[in-house]
Image (cartoon, rainbow, N blue to C red; front, side):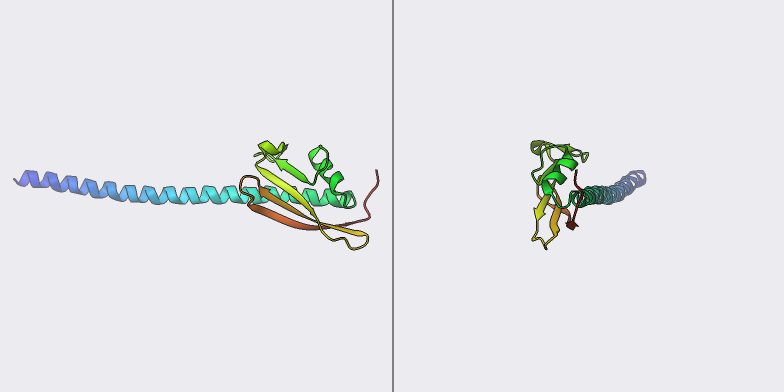
Length: 140
């Protein structure tokens, strides 16, 4: 009888150890998922900022011409919207993961203003927004 009680005690200890390891594993998985999500959001925000800054520089270069700015950035006819794939390369709207949209603001005489919004295409979650002002510009 004594041998049997030692065996059942050993099995009970093993079950407790397995339970503790399972709880630790669940906590680790939760931390890894959180860090993965945070890293992806940070990467998207950083890339969106770079794209928005490029758009701002192009807008200033063109003297506030949204059509020319869009064609400089995407290589296509300017419509005020540029769509990007998952690697942040210009793509068709149907394949877009991210979108950059120019919104013309009220101009002050010679200064042209616009707002640049970069968002995820699937849920329109805004990643970054920039207000831009351009005056003068260069001629081709």
